[in-house]
Length: 292
Image (cartoon, rainbow, N blue to C red; front, side, top):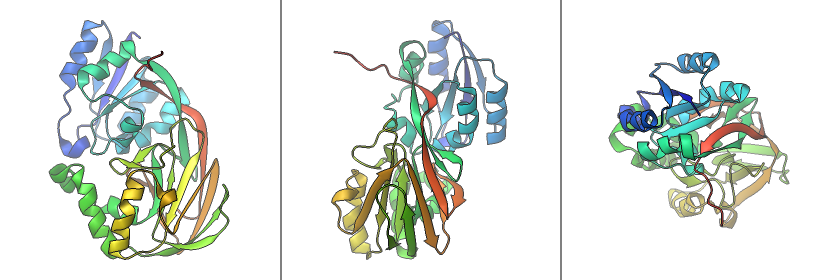
């Protein structure tokens, strides 16, 4: 690789500065030309990717920074190097990306290009997991000030607040094996392995399994929700009582009343919603797998 477009979101991670210079210095030593940009809006980011003639794109930001760029990255088939500079960095965690700028720069010359699945909700792409219900309240409570002040702990604080005000709804499903109506407090459809600052979609989920993983939790008391959290944290919702788990390549969900659908920290659409998975749609640069 001879050149790279680096897009840095100056507002990611609650506005905390990402150390670009060690990353850039490592690439200068490798004689790789870098165009370093700090656009203020997603639209500017998209324009840069559309017009670049670089061989790959590196994005320093969180999942919310990456999400609006997906259609253009997929269309252009440019390899993406994820530089985890957000609050949660769940996509980077699913890719098993290193954290230091020097190690990340080393992937430009020593990593490998692979392709991962992308989820779609009513035609809009997402990386990690789409949620309906309590998690959406958590997303709305995740203000820039709170994320800047508390970091990853902000998710736990917001979850406690959301549990006090969350409202249940009736959901019906099509796809996978589930064909039932149930009253829910929380629904999640996952493409990747992690969401919500390190919560696990499913113990067996990967970005290349070609599946969407669903869980649906019934309304519970605050004590009941607290008891459920360890199962959700480690991706074992299938072992928790009164939780519907399912998987498939397409899943349709209707709710009464209609609910907002959030993914990658952003509001994507609302119910009724049809989810699908696009296999190996996004090219990414990742650490090279060791062979034995």
